[in-house]
Each structure stands twice: as structure tokens, then as C-alpha cells.
Length: 250
Image (cartoon, rainbow, N blue to C red; front, side, top):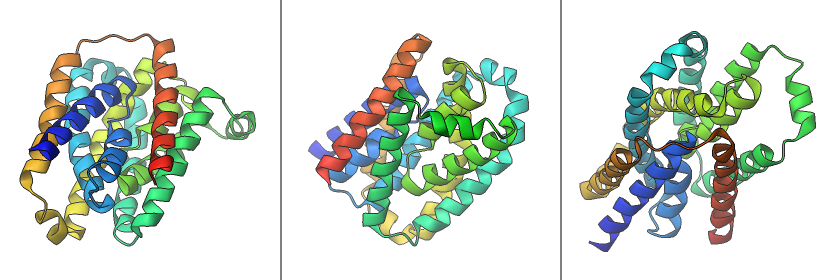
């Protein structure tokens, strides 16, 4: 019963924070499942992706009017995101757990630091290329890492759309959740196909409790408003704290 309560709590908090900053919540669910409940990282990735699919779908429906304003952009990038999701699902099946944990820590710490303290040489390098090319490569990478690590990819989607595609922070979070839904759905399905036997050994109530927390949190926070400036700070701070927690726990 204690494990189910914790899973509900993790789903609730991850959905609350992840939905606000357009991340999906996997950045919090993964370290919580690994370091607190000691669930193997491959199973934690599957559970996280299931929660992310539900949350990103609900958020995308809620913000569908905003997404229509950027449908030209999403049409140009969706195919590349799908390609990244397919590749990541294959790689996750052959990657060692220790490698996945290390990649997770490096990725979220790097993104958090660069969002709060922009690295100028990266920005100066990327501006040499057309924005659409940067966007295509970015969504491919975001979908790839999102599926590989079970985090959805929002930690890359959000700064990509905000800093290099020119979207306002709020719009960047909303477009991010759209991409997260499609790519995480693909990753969830392929993860299940690759690791069906291990996944079926997990109690179904683990998934039910996690998703229940996600749904309750979404209902409570669906009308919350946060300014763009606060979203930026919240995004960077959350990512750095989770990265440090994961590194210390490991």
C-alpha cells in the first residue's frame, strides 16, 4: 500500500510541475522510481512514458487552440521527431542500466545549466544554420533522448522552441507537449514490445496508481497561470535540482 501511495504522489507532483513547464514529468518520475522505490530503470522508463503519454495528451487537448497557431511548424518537424523516437526505442533495448543512468544525469544537468546560464558559443554556432534545420535536428535529438531515458524530451523541446525557434515561453511549452505526446506514444509501444515479459511481471496497480496521480493533478492545475519569466526560472531550477538529486543518489 505504501508503494502505491508513493506512486500516486510521484504521478501527482510530476504532472503538476511537468505540465507547467512543458516537460511531461518524466524528469522527476525516473529518479523517484529508481532511487526511492528501487524499480529497475528499464521498468521505470516504461512507467514514466505511460504517465507522460496521458499527461501530454490531456495538456495538448487543453491547449489545442494555441497549437493551431503553430501547426505549420509542427507539420514540418513531426516526421523527424517520430524518427528519433523509433531509434531511441531500439537503443534502449540494448543499453546497460548504468549507461542509461549516466546519460540521464548528464543530459538534464546540461540542459538546466544552459537554460539559466546560456552558453554563448553554442548559440553563436547554431545561428549560422537555418532555424528549420536546427529545429529538425533538435526534435530528432529530443525524441531520441526522451524515448531512451523515459523523460519525454521536453527538456530539449522547450529551450529549442523558445531560444532557437523564436516561440514565447508559454507557446514553447504547449508545442513541446504536442511533440511529447506523439513520440512518447511510439516509445511506449516499442518499449512494451521489446520488454514485454519483464513489464508484465510488474503489478498492474503500479501503473494504475501512477496514472491516477497524473489525472488528479491535471484536473487540479488545468487553469493555473504562470508568467513567462517565472516559467523560465522554474524550468531551469527544476532541471538542475533533479540532476543533482539523481547524481547524489547514484
